[in-house]
Length: 252
Image (cartoon, rainbow, N blue to C red):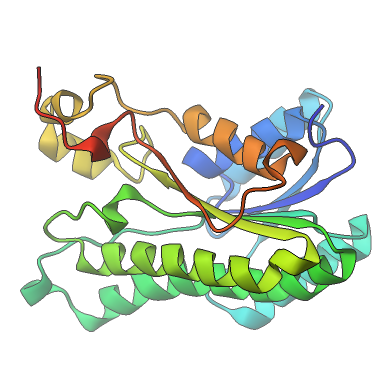
């Protein structure tokens, strides 16, 4: 088991990509705490599923935009399990609209959740990881940071900032043995991407050289790798996992 005796914390962990990451890390031997905001039923079912497979798991309800609440979550995990070795910042929202119609509330909501939540959790664990002289921070970005779509100025801005934040934080923490990397998924079959996928229809698969949508497990496997000792000499990287979408190849 690649993550045996490790403690992982995953935000946005009750559904989609986050849920897959929680299950994958628990299967690799980590104790996993995950954060959810409103999906109580999904959180409870995930806890039951992981426990039934012999995993150790903890669900924490929290709004990632509230720094004090975030700190309480981290403090509680450290008190119960001693430390946080792995942080996965996956919590994110989408509120798409053309810029001229995008209201300030939906601009702020996306930036504060996607970027602000990442900042809040990194801030809550960074010092402890530096003291341990080992840690793994994994931020979930998106190909939308570099390959933009109409109606996603807020989302693209948040994910582009996460990429830059990842690189800058990696430089600061590297000498203390803490790595900071990001994963940039393409079109992944989740509830959050459903509206975009439905709007594009079959055109999406024609744009992807591998001719299929990604699955949450495709991202979870990369997250486990980045959290493991195998990725100990990687930091400040943004790994694109999109089936070749960002290559921009013409359909054949």
